[in-house]
Amino acid sequence: MHQQATEGREELWDRRFPGLIPDTPVLARPVPPEGFLLEGDLVEAVEVGHTDTDKTTVLHVPSIGLVVAGDVVYNGVHQYILEGGSGGLEEWLVALDRVAALQPRSVVAGHKNKDLPDDPVTIEETRQYLLDAIRLLGRNPTPREYFGQMTALYPDRLNPGPVWYGAVGLLGA
Image 1: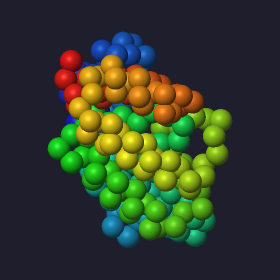
Image 2: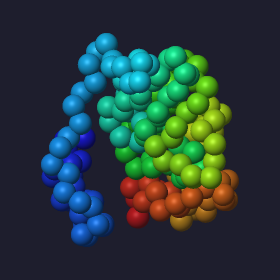
Image 3: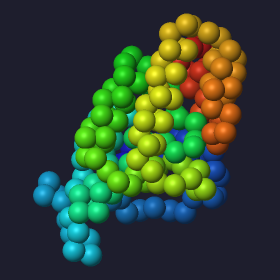
């Protein structure tokens, strides 16, 4: 978070969205190991490892079966796989196992189609997308072939941009 809000912001976000992101001088503080109470319910931070980026954490509210999944689970949106080389996609599968082990009744994805429900089935949908990506990348297609294959498999997902730059980054230009 610190990297993305400082030099990462200047390198990427301010260039992609010039003048659209307000100053954000305050960074979040780490959740205490014992969690914290929110309206009487315990909120726990659960570290799950690498997903679409390093050191991903989800928030778990056991009393209501809620997982706020951040970058671990996607819902109706193409997944950002650019940082998935060198075993990163397989590590993401392990992170999904960690979320599934929490047995959530509701999963709020960090990247989602707002018209879709916060259903735990999104854990398995995210997993299947990754398994398809791993399978197709293993065939060493051109970026254009990979892009066409993934968008054909998932035509209803929003934001195809990550499919393209993931393909170029992992397969070469």
